Length: 314
Image 1 (cartoon, rainbow, N blue to C red):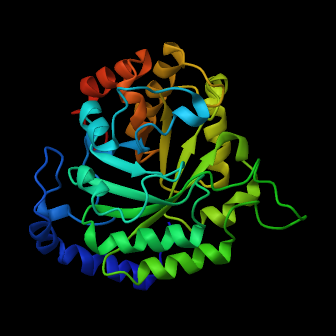
Image 2 (tube, rainbow, N blue to C red; image 1 turned 90 degrees about the vertical axis):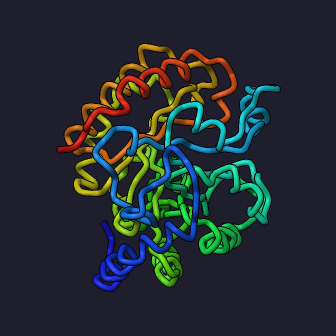
């Protein structure tokens, strides 16, 4: 993890202010954090449930590009309750919701941890504007613990010039600048980037070194049989980087439902890697799917219910 000595000190000081922040927040929720761990970069508990995240999109956002969804589309706040998942990554890849977000985030107040995208597929704002919008949320959103860089690398991430940086939406220097702005906030915030198995180029390491965690995704379900092999390649590039495993519940890469055997395969590996300390958490994708009566979603919900209370770390 990229963390200066000053940032480490800030984290410790922040944790000392934790109880006060929790009291001010006053959020009532079955997932609400205790005063002892409220705030950004809060330590995970040892159960599987506490390490579960959901990838959040606005309701109806899957219709334009994927032609899925309908009248039962649910919002992200309702979706995480339905799935029994406490944490949410909110990604505005279609440009919604629009700022200001004050009313929209009220439905997310019961999330234990919340992150917000500052790089994503939306074209209605620049990355700089998205970052500024997210920073405006920080003092008003007690459970906001970090920012996400979705679809961060371009194509297969290969450098455009020999020996250059990986092809990405932000340079390494730009990431350092964002980090300075984040560290200037009154609480600590994590920075995470999305990485696909098709982008396992050694050049990505320079960018990965500048973020707190990586979200590791397999875009095409047909590549899931190679998940162990691809994860091993990733670990050679970033052996110590805190990583969350992304779990699709619909095959977006090939625009069709995901076979149940592949859902079982990735969840089986996920539980194994959680127990071994290879990954810090799991991210189920995505909230609009929860109103679509999909077999993979229902199976995942049952799987979560069966394993939620398991201790995955000593």
